[in-house]
Length: 293
Image (cartoon, rainbow, N blue to C red; front, top):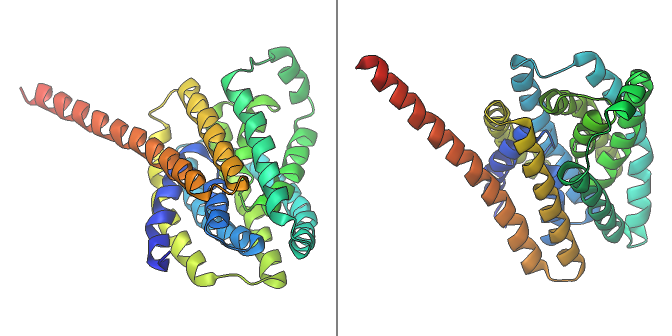
């Protein structure tokens, strides 16, 4: 794959990152593994993409008042601690040729669990209220778990933080997305530093991805406000399922099928967002014509 393609790749993944609050590594890590990158290199490169998207998304979500900064710092600092545990584990597994399978199984189980929660599970308000009484403790646990998973799988941790803030901390989805991407910055930065000290990192690819994500993430973050929470939950649930299915095919050595699924779902969701932009602009023109008339 020509390295110049990593710039537009970062841009389009950045759009989805800003919209879903997932960082982007959830798409890029499986893609790089399919393309034959070593697990530690794939993870470090994905984290660099995620760094660009989290910074850019955080700025946009902050402007839209979707970030709870105190909660973000709590989750982020706890996430740094969790990240310290994961990096040595990945390097150990890679040395024993087990990193790919462990990362893939982690993806399948976690994505499947959260997809089920978004698509089929009903909220238990009483339980949420009870958990909210221990908000700080809840946020610390979310951060520790997200930090560990972030450096294990090359993701921001946002695909974990967002649903847990909704289900365990009782956050509105848009506030969960904004708080998630802001918290992810500290977690991702910690992971990049750890991998830089312990393995090879392709900084050229990383910089191209960061630049692309930095341009794309605000687009997705601003589009989020045009969708209902229930719709975003549904999209996110099916998005998780598609990624999990692509990882399953990758482990079955059907890399072409896995790649087709991964690219199809990414293009599909980008198409949905593009259609929304087109519809909104069409409505704006109608309003302008009405006022002009």
